[in-house]
Image (cartoon, rainbow, N blue to C red; front, side):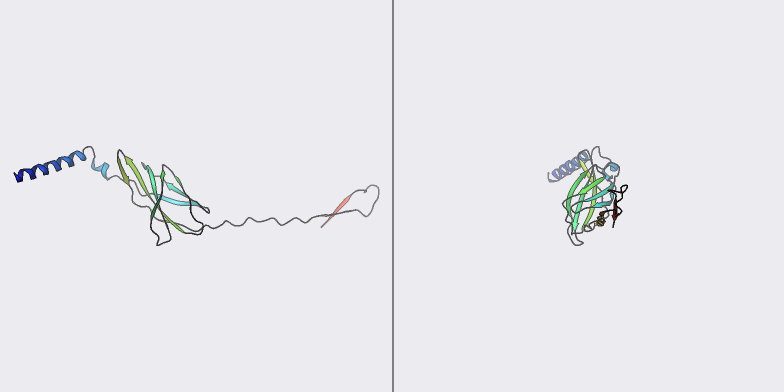
Length: 159
């Protein structure tokens, strides 16, 4: 009887494995999104904008962020169906490192890509100061010393 129980348990396990994989082909199970490719577009005091080259079938992206080379990676945010990602709540005097992971859904399963390359977001550099116009010299107005009738009230400008 002991051998029969063992055979029954093995048969149930095999049956459960067959039922759980029914309808899933090897191509469906192995397909994962390609590694995301992205670059930084703009850095402001508190934000940074990234441009992502979208892959086919990608549902969204997981955004991982760390401060400094030795910092720990933290899941910062999610982005859905987006080619531009805006990172917010950044500090101006910190260097950030960003990497992405693409994900797509099919039915109830979620497939993740490999991590993208890491990109460095440098400290905020305030733009070049706008050139200020030098103040215009104020003209001094004086009447013409002639004082003839035709030139009465005529003014000359001297600098």
